[in-house]
Length: 101
Image (cartoon, rainbow, N blue to C red; front, side, top):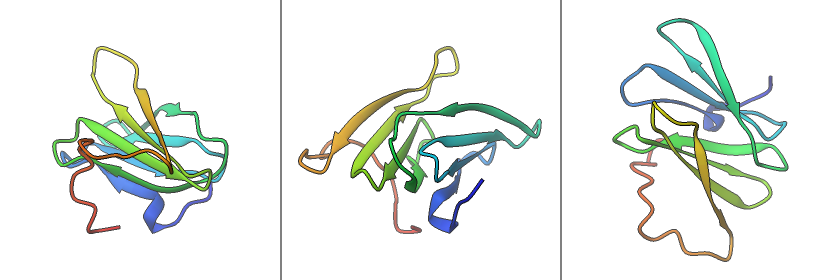
């Protein structure tokens, strides 16, 4: 697994680590159990950036294919992405504090 500092992010509650990988997947790790959660797939190329919203309810990933995925998290359902491309506006999408990128 290959990643850099911009490609890994801790969920605000400290329970989940998200890692953006060169194969276009986002891998998540449950830090309490030490287990890997099912990977998030959809990007065609390597992940450039991952992050969580301030409330921890969404995870976003951005890749070299210029797509931004916002994954809505619900413990009773699978993670499902909302996709944005470079031509679309992301106004209104809560990306939280990204100052630590």
